[in-house]
Image (cartoon, rainbow, N blue to C red):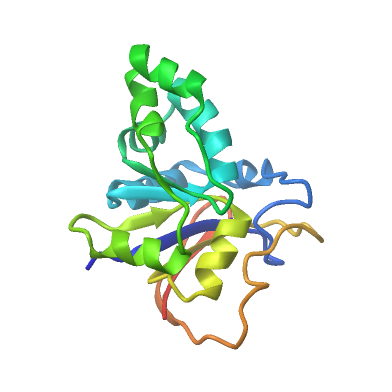
Length: 195
């Protein structure tokens, strides 16, 4: 059974973005070492999953992007989770005909059933770990339902004051075991926890 890893950047005060989705602060403290470490996390994954909103914005950005993360973001299979149904945008399907980088986005599996059942189906399939990467609401649901097998929490040296949290739906305290800590020259500290 493969595990579900959650990768999320956080401010010191626990927000994953500003109140309107602002995330530019993530890149200010990034350095070559932290980017190399994050890239390895993606290389260890066999599937990237995300909520619909994140999928819509990422599928517009990544097929035309450049840089070290372009490879894994465009090559790994994708899964998009939605509670309201989803139809793959025709412009993405058309882009995949001429742009191989758009193909895995256009071929993403769509999951709209019960979240726990859908995640457990994916976990039961053979392959490398699943990486949940994006969407405060989606992450909150995964956490609240206890579906995360490994938390990759990347803390950035910034205080936002207000923003979007991901732990607000947890009904009762959940103990985690610290598996790894890695600090980087730009001030980022990565913590990997397991239930």
